[in-house]
Length: 452
Image (cartoon, rainbow, N blue to C red; front, side, top):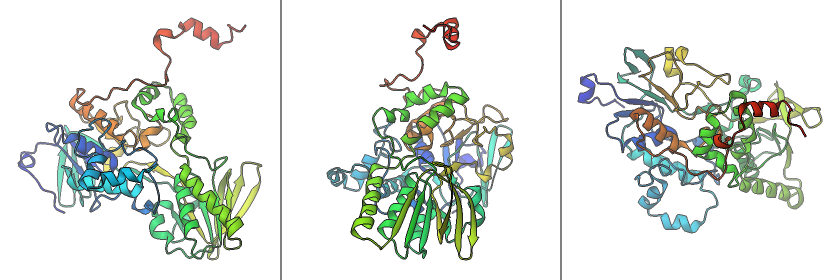
């Protein structure tokens, strides 16, 4: 695809904002910017079309958040790019409502995202950014067949599959990340399969394998967690996916943020109840109703220490943290449901050396989602989906992407164009200033001076 250059390009006027990557986050931002004509923006994607996690679109998988937390509705419910607008445009609103879904099929939401990507303005697919340079008062983005200039950048390339060090040397047709599950599972000819990772992605792989075992005779599912635990999907727990929680979280120290993130992990990374029920019922059938067809073993509290090639098979050395024992597992195939990690795109090139990283290897973000870097403050680098440690667990989920996009637009404009202020919270997270103890009294209390 050839990038179309306008009269503004000929005059060498830079864009106000250029986006690298078109995933849900930058798609949300592009939708909101349609209502802000004074911001000139374009978003670039090397793929030929929008495609959201195609390797994980197995039949029956469900979204773990409400369809109302779509690209725009939480901040601009009148937008033509809402999920409801998609249903109406495809003449299936009533059919969708009558289906009475407990959770929306992920395939449906993926089709919604693709529909938006075909219609929203300012998207350029098949445009691979080879390098980004900062010069004078702007960023220069270079493609194979031209370049674009912008005063500000937003990185929305998403997260990359995380592969543990012990598995990197063995990646191939029979040892792969679950991001390739849809294309690999059907052709997998393995009698013994080990799935590593006890979160929702691991559960979806296990559910698919149990539903269509093929030549599989043994299935082992291991998790580092104490058990195969459900997502904490209660009203109070879901308050962590709210603007007011993010604003309270931002005021915490680094250690306090780490503790809060750990305490809320199952609000995001747990198994859907429907997935748990499906797997357990299938295991029941295999044990009591269809004995002898397949042996399945679920092993929590396990951590892979080492993997070795043993002919055409694998030998996994595993530590059992429940009792401290060491186990050996044998497999013909290993599927890694080991999650995702944010990383800066290679296209940033020399800019990467000027960006501050935190101890987790993530860019150090300011409260307004700008990265800390050594360049001019007038040229901002925004990061989408990179604030798991700085902004809380919701930042790596779909739940607050519309609110985050609104915050980015407000920062660009220097005013509150979108109402991004928190709602009235049901829970009070931070110590209220009016009722806080005087400093001296609080210090004495913490030192044990006020014991009865």
